[in-house]
Image: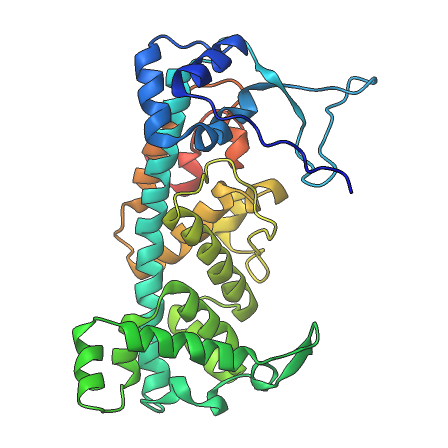
Length: 333
């Protein structure tokens, strides 16, 4: 049996700085670089400087791409004029972007929880625990990889765990009094994923009540948006890089092809799978929830403050060109 590959040797921060300098990165202040590497971590920062490494080419002059990820294969050496301070600025830009996205997503999560509880709770205050409100395809037990799987039971199990561990006053009061928890109270312990999955699992006629209340127009597209926003939310909550990440499942615009908002934006396939498309979807919902919101202005200001690194253009965020945030398409100054 062949021996496993050797693990990479441990390096001290000063040695990591020396390696970056050997590979062509400009480091104006080595003490600051050591401090930032200790605060953030070499491999966490490596995701931000990866696009700044020199790409590899085949014999025909085309980019070499990884057979699994499809991303360009890059050399260890950096392209010209890559400054460590700019990498830190890009890292801080991404952090601020995550915080802004969470701010918009919070509005969506709370509003969706509220209208689901109101619209379905008015039919039955305990509807959330009853199968008759759920699509029969979800409540059916299926075999998957030799195991019995029931998505409804899985959802209920997650709900029970959240209820039992909740410290929300209203939940604790009902729990201690051994009283049934009505829909409008139980949603206070739901997380975004539980909310999104409940809407997806609902019987179609109940989904339609929510869609009509939101004046959205297409149930399947709302399911797609909620799921994609949940993935984005989880990345933000776990401090993952988002500024140039591509999603495997682009934002769907089914049913919105003629909507003036999306006609103006004219989102490409690449835009729909990157942060630009996600911003467009979040803003569409946030604007419906709070028409006076200035969230998009904050996003535009932040995007336009992105550090100017040639290998890290605006188009890597899904924007149509490198002129910055397309304010005119969103009707903002």
